[in-house]
Image (tube, rainbow, N blue to C red; front, side, top):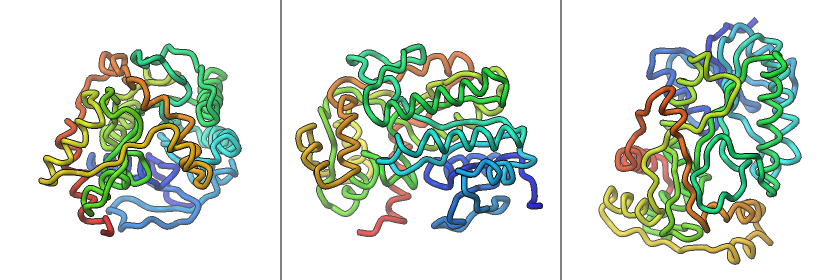
Length: 316
């Protein structure tokens, strides 16, 4: 039997590692779980890595044995969500239920679909007509139904598009920060003069940990707080101020993204959510703030930390 940990993190990607950082910073220990048994960095003291196939409920139950809180951060490849995400969620629900732990799911807001530029809040219906939006809606329903049925306790935290250390595959990841530091032309999408909420991944991790510690949070979804909603153009200016030089960008619209999607599956998947960048995209997190307070990192500080990480890890 492996050593038991209070906190188990399913998925050792960018969000899972950010949660690890937050827990370690609070003096906690944790177990990371992924399929490969490998991560591209040295893990801090008090953190172990175990291997499991999260599509096997028995293996999920085994790695979660003895845990009090399980963070569900694993996800299938971006272009395979409809085919693979519901089955993964079903396995995690069954396995964590067998372990007796509480489940915290880190998610996004794709399930709502377009909202005509109005603030996006938790009471909106799941109206998405996109492949990934429907997949997210199905997974959310599965999780909250499992809670309602008494199978296990579940809470969902939803963030906007996020950025920060280790975040490379976001639209404000390598294509913007990496290009900015190498002097190449970066990429932004849609109308860059419309407000667009962005979530710092360190804040998202801390807010998920906060949700995990409040019994009253369970049984529903919460929009986690983000720093002030600004335009992508203003976000670029903050990066420019941090690195001390202009950042060249190419602005890509829906037509160009669809053309790129003929050859690139990630671009094809991104094209279906372009509505997020063609209308104001504002996440309302007032419910979370009223219940648990606010303490987000200002964009200037978050960009500073992100640039510092890219300077250490980016291959020019």
